Length: 327
Ligand code: TRP
Image (tube, rainbow, N blue to C red):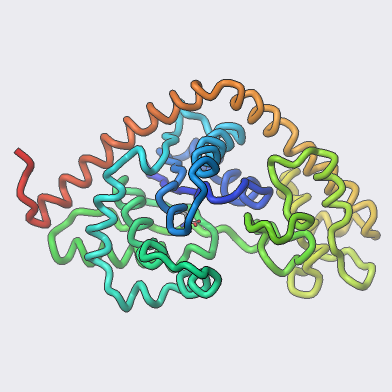
């Protein structure tokens, strides 16, 4: 059976882009593949985190996975740092990657320009991501387009390791979301909706109350003329609303465009669709938050299963590398 692995960082509050983009896909994938979904807390450490916030967000993100419909009876849900094999294989991957290769990662270049403190971990981050994927012999890795370079590097590292030390890792494939499935900022529709807090009116958080959600959608920036048309380049604001409405209702954005002649009704319908999409997820999230031991149990079972798989792969890698067996 195909195996799928993906992860998300607990370094911000989950927003509509995470839900409609990544998580909705994971929910579908869990029924066609053996899926592992990880809260990648070690990745969050690449920039300084407040300890209490990190702890709360890690549990909160795991709760969100479950609230959107990831079923722990079907998929494995766990926290990266609960499986110490990630850190160990990450070191091996750091030694497999070339310095020049890591230097060419565009996300590192972007992020290191933005941060005043650039950690060594920010530089070696893709080696940890490679370890995440390779530990589970994952065939497919559903991610956003911004992660393409990291998945390509993971493939190169797997191939390099296999050719140096013998067949050890499955070479994974990236599965990339299409542009239409990308949720843009409601105030700045040419940039992705993101966790960074500099555009609160453009970002819909799972934690927002539903009245705020509706207000933010109705105040979304649209484009200057009055035509409703799905054209991401020429009409980014309207196209974003159409994409969101389509994603919430399972429709096609270009077809939806034909049913509107004015912005007002499009905004009203999109606001309602987003509210109705979020309502049950918020309710389930609140229910699960009232029972943190239930979520903790899911994570404990998830980590136990993950460790079995990860341990087997790591032993294989250690053996092929020539590490002396532990007695
Ligand atoms: N780097 C990914 C991101 O920021 C998160 C991530 C870490 C990930 N490890 C992964 C995604 C492994 C897929 C597979 O979005």
